[in-house]
Image (cartoon, rainbow, N blue to C red; front, side):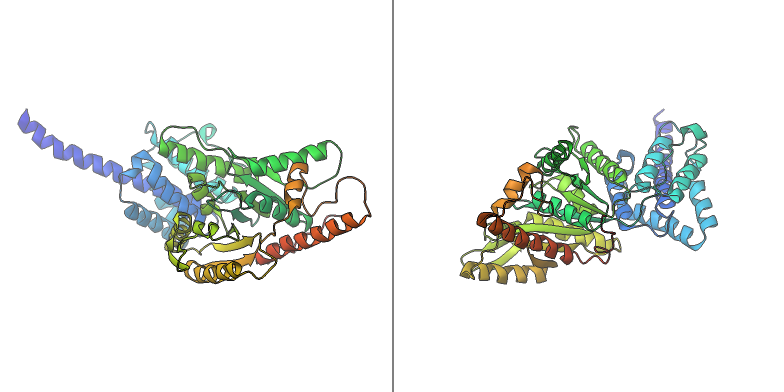
Length: 429
C-alpha cells in the first residue's frame, strides 16, 4: 500500500496543478472576453483584475504576474483577430462546463468586469452570454444585464483627505451644484457612510425641496457604509460590489462626485481606484500638511510622504504599471488668511516643493466663511437663491458681496478641473 501511495501521490499533485492552471486560464479568458468587449481593457478593469486575483480564494495561491500574462495573451489574441481570440477564450472556459461551482465564479468575474467602469454596454452583455454558452448553461441561468443606453463618458472626482473637518463634503456638494447649473447630469456617492456628512447635507436639501420652499437641482445620490462582514477579504469584496452597484445606478451622469472618509480605510483606497481627479482639501496649517508628508517643523523641511500621501503615490504607481495615467491630483488650500503672514508664505513654499515631488497641482480653495455652516443646515449652496424674502439693508448687501466672492472661489476650482466639457452642458431653461 505504501508503494501504491508513493506512486499515486505525484500523479494526484500533478493533476491538481493542471486543474488549478486550467482554472486560472478560464478565469483570465472570461475577464479578457468581457474587458475587451468595447476595445482594449481600461484601467478600472485592470485594477479590478488585481483585486480578483487577490481576493478569490481559488485564485489567490497563484502567481498574479503569471495570471496577468495569461490575461494579456487572451486580450492580445482578441485584439489581433476577434473571431480567433474569442474562440480560444471560449475553449479555455468550456473546460469547466458542468463543474459544480466554477461556472458561478466565472459568471461573477464576467459581471464584475462588465460593470467595472460604472456601466454595462451591449457588447459586454453579449460577451457574458458567450461565457455562459461556453459553460453549457441554459439561457435562463445567464444573468441579464441591461445595456446602459444613456451611459457616456463619466468623470469621477474624488474628495479625499485622511483628516476630517477640511471641507470635503461642502466642496463636493458645491461642485455638484455648480456643474448642474451648467447643464450637466451629476451624481454623488458618500463613502463616509457612518459619518454621512454629505448624505445629511443632501437630505437637508431634499427636505427643503419637498416642503415646496424652492425648486433646487438635487444630484442623484448613493450612500455606502463599511461592510459588517468579519472576514477582511469578504468585506473588501462586499464594499467593492456596493461601489460598483452605485456607479451602475448613476449611469448616464457626466460627473460623479465621491466623498471619502477622513481616515485610512479600504473605502478610501477604493475611491482612489475609480477616480479620474482627486481633490484634497487642506486647511492652511502646518498641522494639516502632515496629511501629505512628514515635516521637520523646526527646520521647515520635508522628511517623507505620510500614510495618505503614500497611498496616493502607490495608486499612481499601480496605474502606470497597468499602462494608465496617474491621477489628476489637486491640493486646495482652504481657509487662506487675507494677510500675507509669514506662516502662509512658508506653507506656500513647502506645498510647492511637495507638489513637484508628489505630482499634485496647488490651487486656492474656500476661505473661512460662516456662510458655509449656515447653508449646510438649510441644504443650500452658494449657487442657490437665498431662502426667504429679499432684504435690502446694509447687512444683506455685505452678505451678498461675501457670497459672490465665495461663489467665485468654487467657480475657480471648477475651472481648475481642466475638463474640456465642463462648460459643454446646456444651461437649464
